[in-house]
Image (cartoon, rainbow, N blue to C red; front, side):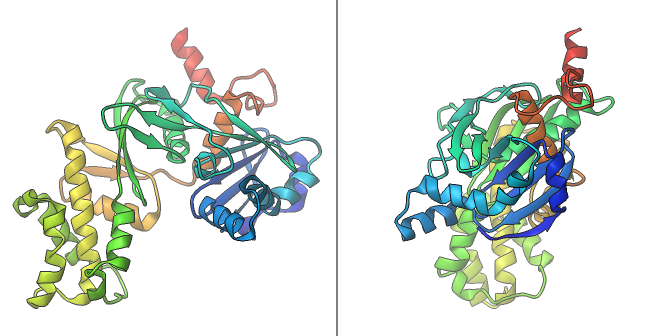
Length: 358
C-alpha cells in the first residue's frame, strides 16, 4: 500500500502512544496519536479492504498476509521508530468477513461513549492489531453497521461532554454514502438504525443501466434538477415508488423536458428523496427537528439541501472526530492510558459518567 496525504515527521514516533486505523472498503486512514489522543501524524493509503483482497487473489497469497503487507507499508516506519511497543486499534471493513479477520458484531442497544467494545486481535509482523466490532440490529429484517460506529462515537463524545446536553436526548444521525445509515440515539446509546443502498444503486444506474446512457457530464451540480427529482419522490408522484419514478429520467429526456446534463442530478434527487421518504416511516409521522450529518462534504451538501426542503435543520461537526473516537475506544479497551499526565486520571467521557453515577 502506497501512502499519501501524510502529515507529521518521523520524530513524532518517539512520543507515540497509539496507532489508530480507519480501514474502509476503498481506503485506509492512519493516525499516530500521543498519550492524550492528540494527532502526531496522519496519512492515507489507497489500499482499502477491496483492493487488498483483490491483490491477494491475483498474487495467490493468503489474505491475512496481504493485509499484513499493506499495514507494514502504511505504518511500518512509525512503529519501528517508536520508543517502545505501540498498541494498534482498527475500525471499519477490515473487521468484516472480507477483511483481515471477522470481528463480529455487538447487538443494539449499545452505549458508544461508555461501553468497552470487545476486540478481535490479529498478529502482524509489527505486533498485535486490535480490530473493533460492528453493530447489529436483530429486528425482523436485521441490520448491520461497520465503520460508521467510529463516526457515531465521535458525535456521542461531543454530546456527552458538551455543556447543557441532556443525557437522554433523542437524536437522529445520517451518514450518507454507498450504504447510507440513519441512526437513532438516546443520549449516547444507539437504539436503532436503518440502511439505504442509495449510493451503490446510484452508481449502478449511472454506469450499468439504460438511464446512464443518457447522462452527459455537467461542470457543476444542477440544483434545480436535483430539487425537481427530490420533489417528485417526496410528492404525490412518488406514491408509485422509486422503481416507477426512475423511468422518468428517460421519458423526460425523450420528450425534451430534461437535458442530458441534468439527468445525473435529477436521479440523485429522486433517490435521496426516496430514501428520506422511507426514513420518515421511522419518525411515526413526526419528523425530527434537526439531523446531524456525518460524511463526505459533497454528499452531505445534497442531504442538507434535501432535508431543508422539508423544513428539517441539519448540522455538521467541526473537524475530523475519528482520531478522538478511536483514542477513546482504545482507552475503554485498556490499550491507551486515560488522558492527562496522571495515568490514573479519567478521560472526559469517563468523568462525565462518574458524575452521573454519583
